[in-house]
Length: 77
Image (cartoon, rainbow, N blue to C red; front, side, top):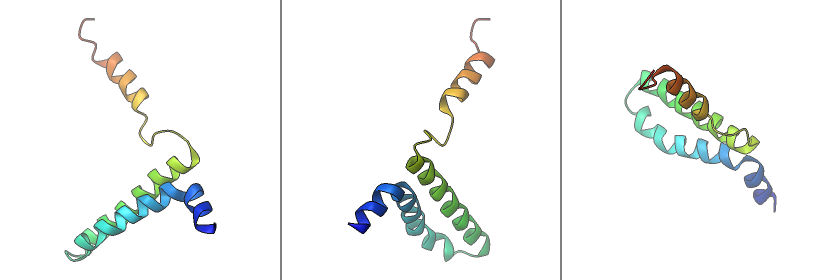
């Protein structure tokens, strides 16, 4: 039951970190700068998972971007 509670409360974070951890060994074998990129992948995976867990919506504000692009690049002004 403990694992089920952990998965329900932190599932997105765990999934993001697991995905990044699966991709990290590929980058770790190629040098220091790629290891820093791996750390960036871990951070991004954790952050996106955290947004999912907390129910804060999408990590990227798609609606705001769409509205901004629509206002900026209207085809017929």
